[in-house]
Length: 73
Picture 1 (cartoon, rainbow, N blue to C red):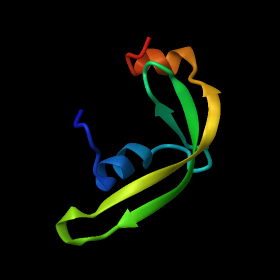
Picture 2 (tube, rainbow, N blue to C red):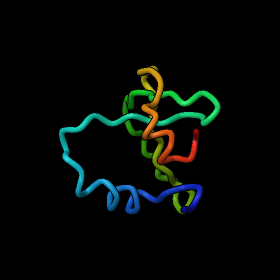
Picture 3 (tube, rainbow, N blue to C red):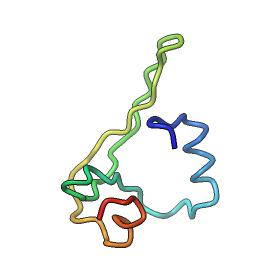
């Protein structure tokens, strides 16, 4: 998997997921916690634009099955 996803790749991965599910960021394999997503910021600057997902606080430890799937255990 590439180190950075494109918006299209992210949308493709999420299109089959229930749209009412909450979204969390999995952060740092050494401290595997889930973080809430606050908002998405789009920086459109020619060919160097990017989408940024803002973090909005920690939810707690990632479930073991998620850490295992990410190879973080």
